Length: 149
Image: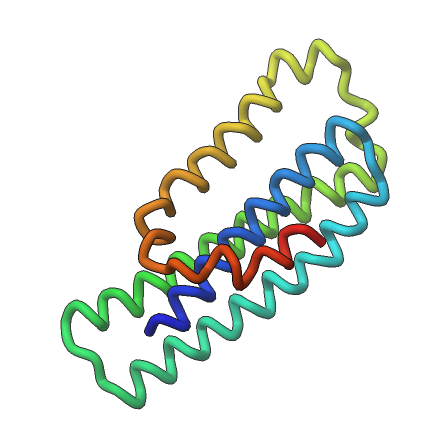
């Protein structure tokens, strides 16, 4: 079960990095960064499939009771939500690649409060996982390499 928790925590970090890069790509109209986001989205998708398989295998092999079953199901649901957020980051990157981001005026960006939206989502995603991450002390050192690449 600890391995699944670590994988969900890794997925969360990957999605936060994707969102931060999507924000930069959008506001800087950075096409290379947008391509990188689209490329890395496949990693998020693969990790989601792996976690789904792990949860199903855990349930099938160990027939967990009450709290363990709830945890396994919640990990699967969390994983699904994170994957969707990753898909949104990819959608923003595709929007940048299609040069649609250039069509927005500064006034439209300000009125829509796009920067505030990006920041709010990133903060919410960061804060909601803090108690979860504290359970996994080795997480930061083990996966810090992915975040720097």
